[in-house]
Amino acid sequence: MTWETFPYFAGISSLLWLAGLGLVYASANHSKRKLAGEGFILAGIVLMTVFIAGFWINLDRPPLRTLGETRLWYAFFLPIIGWGTYRRWKYDWILAYSLGLAIMFLGINFLNPETHNKTLMPALRSPWFVPHVIVYIFAYAMLGASSIVAVRGLWKRGKSLELLPMADNLVYIGFAFLTLGLLFGALWAKEAWGHYWTWDPKETWAFLTWIAYLSYIHYRSHHPKKETAAMWTLALAFVVLLACWFGVNYMPSAQTSVHTYTQ
Image (tube, rainbow, N blue to C red; front, side):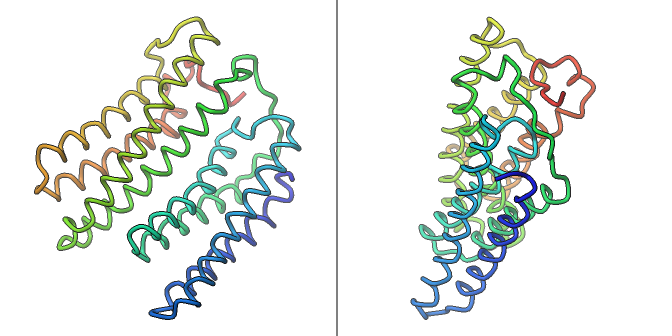
């Protein structure tokens, strides 16, 4: 599996997800049609699993080196989270948004393929590298799904209180993985650079992201009935997350960051 074969896997997976979503939406009370739709969605996830596994073997390193590779993982986790959330709360729209975002991220990789293999620099050859990045991307996907709920809640004002328990659970799980990723990163930094934390730009934004979601959890526990402010807090927390993931790479301070791996 390579970036050259990626369009085939991404295209077929996207078609399976769209077909599955169509069947779920068209099923109404037709349980067999709904099950078939979920089967299509799972088939798309399995196909992306096969591609990532083959890609990993072909590269002879974890495909976690570039932004394109992290987008690939994000597009892989989102359908899993969307399907799991749909199974738990039975909201069709969370499935639609999750699959739509996954297809969008696959589309970005299709339009901007990073076909040049990049070897792992010494700092990335750590046993903490793979768990740190995978846990982080999974947390990003969970928290991305919670932001979808926030936007939905802001759009459908009357349903905010109904949606908040789902947002809370997504944030709790995402925040737990985010914290794990932060701890794994500190252990990795100690091994790679000799210190746990240096307030490097990437580390600073990672801390701000963690604080943003902790603020949401704190706000919810003290103001359970103020749903609009909670939804705005959650939506803004995702903006901080995006700044940490993508934005920091384009800031002038990134030139001095030890977390810049674009070369």
